[in-house]
Image (cartoon, rainbow, N blue to C red):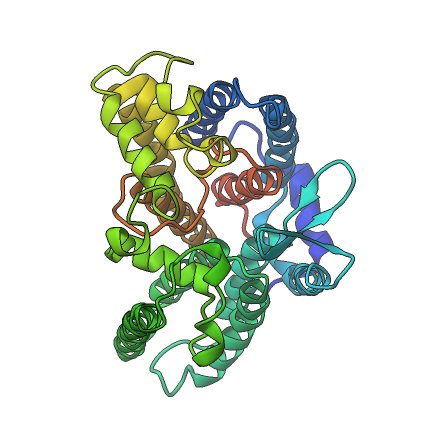
Length: 414
């Protein structure tokens, strides 16, 4: 596929047929966003520090709606035609956030840049830049057997590896783990040799084994030195090993596989997930009522995370199984529609973009909800359109705007 000048695709915006809009996804997005605002309000009701966050979320959603509309109105091929410039800008911001005096440090991580009116998180735009860059490389590169595709794979490895390395340096594990599934889904529909995926699966299993062995060695090290797993002892093991994990990340893994070992009293590393499980379990069929959830209102579910990472727990407690099912149904509609639009796309580029976005959202939804019910370790992955966060809301709206653009311009080929 040959992409023309970016200006050629902006002219399509002026002449495109009216009335070709997919309404299912925007309706689901609106429903999820309204639920998010309502339960953010409930979660921060008793929190003086976060009391106005629901108002900020409304502002973010308003800006996100405008961004969604703007991206939807422009041919998706325009965004891919300038992918290299967007990617370069992404790399620049990922470098800037690591510089002292520019990046804001919080909780041992340096992930945000203060723009005055809100804190911008470069890793969120990195997802978009990587999506567009991978799509651009795939449509310009021959894909077949592994031997034929080595050049393309080398370029892809560099294009994905550089931002992943910079994100790891922050560190921001939650943004890091969502990129590989998105990229592999795009490679899969590009009909890459199955041997590549076999090798990739083998590499994944090796990495998983290394992490498991490292976690075992970490526990043995802490036991031999009679160290507790508290914050004051974090950092003592990581300087003795070559595995690029920080001790607080190891604590999260060990908290999942051996919670009683890391937190014998249940008041430290495992507190959040324990309270989340209580929240979800106490909701019953219809919940305890909006703003009536004891875990969030009394602060047992920590107020710093109740309105973002653990917002699903608040919904489950206050609206029960039926409320949780409503959220899952709306997400199911978004994901199913994304796959449908990927199938309707008239070119490989449209399929790559729609599928990449859909897989990215699927990972966010699965990992966030699984985290709140103790099925996976805590990673801090937010829930799209529901969790509080400016950069995340804007990136979600922009990504879904790309999918809408694929639907709207699927017939405009010359």
